Image 1: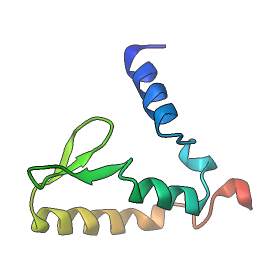
Image 2: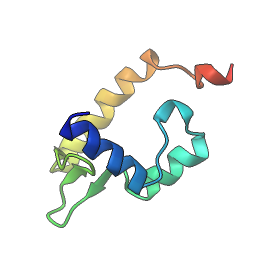
Image 3: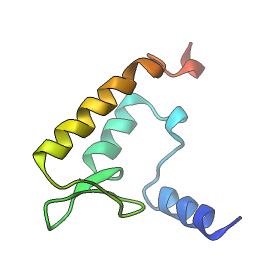
Image 4: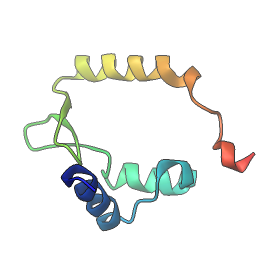
Length: 84
């Protein structure tokens, strides 16, 4: 395993996160609300919790990000394919 894989494994274990495809909607919601994916940091910037990458610094940028994500919605499964 490389350093990034080890770091990710440790990160997920620390937050008790399963792979996304194994999470129930309730578990996913918990991790969203616990800010294990994204959070707004002290300078009011939307940040990825694992990498620290910035995703939006203004409401306008956030609206653009939300719109872009909504455009991807049709490419995803309605439900976990393992549940079907």
